[in-house]
Length: 126
Image (cartoon, rainbow, N blue to C red; front, top):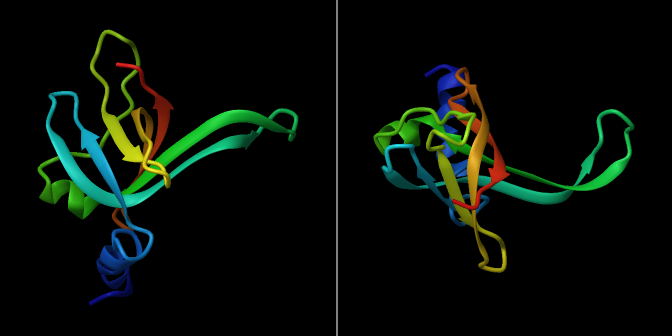
C-alpha cells in the first residue's frame, strides 16, 4: 500500500470518527437524494477582508467529506450551482449546541490525490 493509499484509508479515522473530529453531515443532491455522512464542518463569523486585511463580521461555513463515502452513498462530487432557477446541492449540520443549519454548496474543491472534497457553503433559506 502506498503512502497516498494509506493516507486515504486513514481518513476513516481522522475525518469521520465520531469519537474524534467526525461530525454528522447531511448532503442532498439536486434530485433530492440524501445521504447521512460524517466529516468535518466549520461555521465561523469573523473573516479577513482580502482587500484590506482587516477582520470583518461575516459568515464562513464549509464541510470536508471523504470522496469514498460519497461514492458509497451513491452520490457524485457536489457542485456549486449558480442561479436560483436550478436546485442546489444542500448541506445540513448541527452546531455544537444542537442548532440545525442548512446551507447550499457555493463552491466545491475536490482533492483527488487524497480523496476529500471541501465545499464552501452559503446560507440557504429554501
